[in-house]
Length: 115
Image (cartoon, rainbow, N blue to C red; front, side):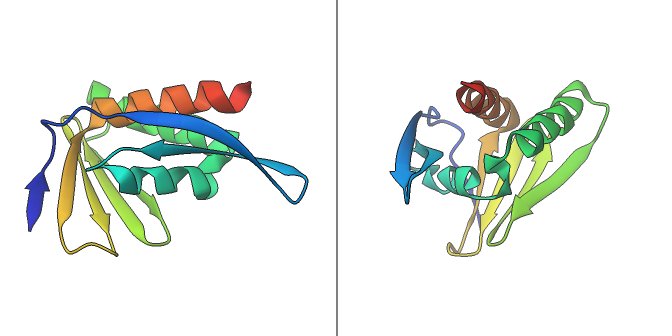
């Protein structure tokens, strides 16, 4: 089942936490896209992966790539020019979100990580 949530604005915030003397940066995303927040605790918390993902998704937006599958342990994303499909293993539905919104989130995340 695909649930189309693209009528909701993507709202998110960034934060830093200290854990065992180490600063951990992450972001939280409001419902119905809260599963996107898990991106910040995956390998996409590393600068080089965020840069690479943004570049790949920008190619999808530009039409250079038709599709781009990506993700991490328990969540898969399938990006096309207009929409990205989110398949969270913990949920029983596939959600959609505009790909441009994910790219903007990742650009903002990159700026936050570079501070």
